[in-house]
Length: 440
Ligand code: LLP
Image (cartoon, rainbow, N blue to C red; front, side, top):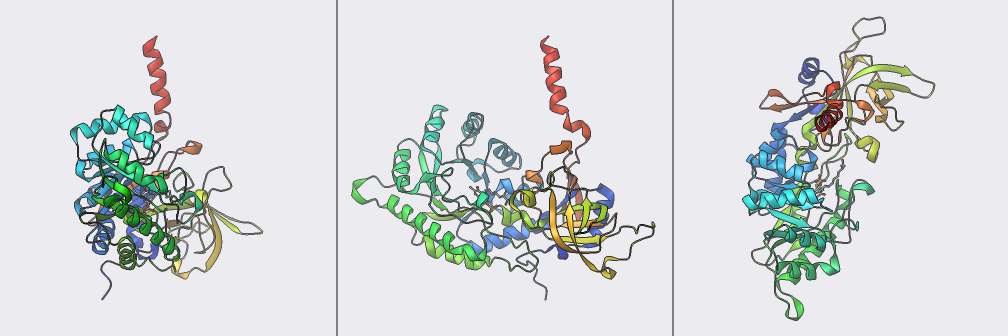
């Protein structure tokens, strides 16, 4: 019997006819996010971590439909900014399920969150610097606080997303216990937190385990301090997110139950009343999304064939920013140069190509040296595993309106983010001009 909730959904597992219909109706570039798959990913996480608090790192995909599905599945929300807190509240997370991770927080974000806390006193603020506590206190905040620790070890798919060990994040490990004890005099210290990095693959589990073990040590030291300090009873030890997803078609999926087991073992024994917490983002949404893009140009050159498409680094930044690999599948539908229908993709030969976007930057490629079924103008390409950090990192660079997004829920397609129009590119300028006019 087919696995009803497989560890990964590959780009080849999507219903090609459905994707072609969606592209025809809504045009390209188009993100498609399957909410049913988001639910499956939540289920696997909850099954692997039955006794832990599971929090969704909202930054991976902030769409309302995703947030509501995650909320209904029972995960909490981990938010990196006032904007993310705002979205999570709008999607129905109450304060007890909101965790705001303050990374060098702008004053405006702290003002906003302190205001929210007045109405939702159960929210938690995770702080990575002692002076953030002072800034919270200045705003009248005296609620739940979690202390973010720099565990001194990290992991991740790229150095730019290897967080643990980076000085920017968290209080140095050897000062963290004192910082937590000091914080407990002014706040309700409920947890400690560390995040190794993003996209940890099966080969990097040793450093993840090392991080988790250090966090277990710290929790025990806080519960039962050497030398007479007051104990700090934690509700949880949050060991971050970062569970990797296989982007290459033949890469094995992360064995989540094994990772969960290793995590539990490494953190044990936790003091009585202290739970494990994890906060995955990518794992929840990555394989639930594809980016659809249309081939506009096919250009043979002496070195390679360049396939020009209508999506680029402004729509999906990851290849340009991290050299990230995303699988690309040709769904066909294009025309031959004489204007006739091109043969079905199954009858075409695999051809090595570079898939390049419309932005004036050399780094604007979605894939290099890819074997695609001989692309023709008008073909539709599906860029896979695009549901995490895809739309979220989109920009308007080169004055390119951001793409549309469709959510699939129980088979029904709904436009959840409309395609931007040229007018959207100048809204803030026109509003500023209007503001100047009002003042004169
Ligand atoms: N918790 C914290 C404190 C984080 O900073 C992050 C991600 C997560 C959880 C979730 O990590 P995940 O489970 O999604 O790996 N734009 C990059 C990823 C940056 C991740 C930043 N922090 C990318 O596209 O690969």
